[in-house]
Amino acid sequence: PGGGSVAATVGALGAALGTMVANLSSHKRGWDERWEEFSDWAEKGKACHAELVSLIDADTAAFDSLMDAMRLPADSDEATSERDSAIQAATREAIEVPLRVMEVTLDAMEVLAAMAETGLAASVSDAGVGAACARAAVVGAYLNVRINAPGLTDEDESARYLDRAGSLRDQVEAAETAILATVTARL
Image (cartoon, rainbow, N blue to C red; front, side, top):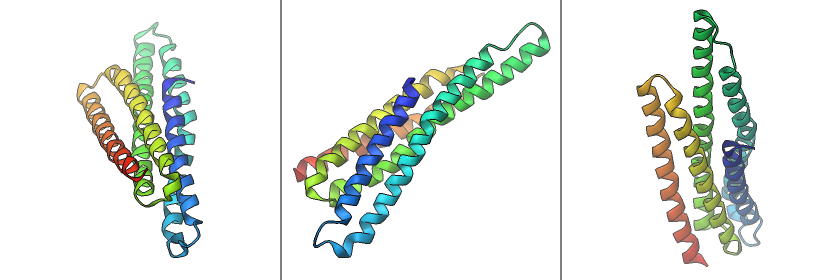
């Protein structure tokens, strides 16, 4: 797999850890009144995990589409125009998939933050590991946006993608810092 697929995989692992802590917390003896709270977090984590798993193959497909577009013939003006259009469309997809990885991973960070703060103390370190996975996923996805955005001929569009990716990266890095501080305080 390429870096984008690995980023989605690592994000899925982070979401899975948040889900696990929520599930373990929902079954803690004496926390019966909190079952619904933790079950809701587990469902959110499970949804993030499922989407991130689907994005593993979506990233591979986006890369394959870009490679296919680059292999199109450019032996006439019409063919060159079709090739250029195909490359631009495939480049957008190769940017939008890792952006989605970043967005879903940010959602997973909400689960991880809640589990770091209120989840089962015996599993708090798992929330921290999940946050580290989520950050790694977002950094990897950010790098994929960075490498593909210059391929767009519309510089304003490229800048918008880069701004969005930078914002998501910053939000996730801040969330990881806060989660790790919470985890460390609870250890």
